Amino acid sequence: MATLDLLLHPVRLRVLRTFLDGRPATTAQLRERLPDIPPATMYRHVAALAAAGVLEVLDEKRIRGTVERTYRVCWHRAEIDPADRATMTTDDHRRTFTAFIGGLLADFDEYLAHEPADPTADGVTYQQAALWLTDTEMAELQAEIRAAVTTRMDRDPNQDRTRRMISFVTMPVE
Image 1 (spheres, rainbow, N blue to C red):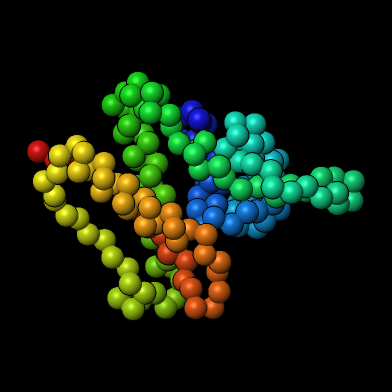
Image 2 (cartoon, rainbow, N blue to C red):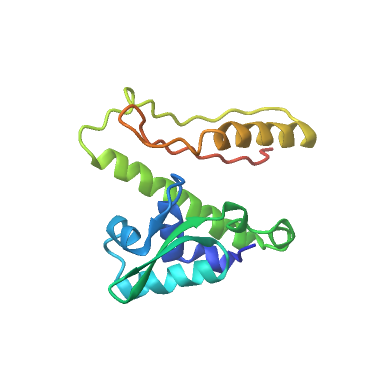
């Protein structure tokens, strides 16, 4: 499992977010998607994620004397271990949630910046619901949602499909 500091580094977090669509990528492809990150910085952070087992090498090709690696994320390694999560401080949780919300805001800003953005036609939704659930019922609901999303993650892009971001937050509210 990854550590909080590994995952919350701003560059590594951005690299991981590029993999949310489930598609593998080379470092060169990551650099195309994140052109503001200097090459040496990109290579260093990709190497750190690979060394931690968060990125897995799918393929290696020799190109002009160097090795080009194709990576994919091992999502089960990109999560904070439950035991480590239990030791997180309130500030650690606040920092993690802030990073999550920051990524969500960046995605929404990017969507709105592409003209013509039409949230209604594009099915954009943001809503909240309050449910009265036992801990067991909550765990069941989370498992159902995870299963519904996971079964759709391996679909290939094509002209009929639009890449959509699904975000999920649960918390008890008094």
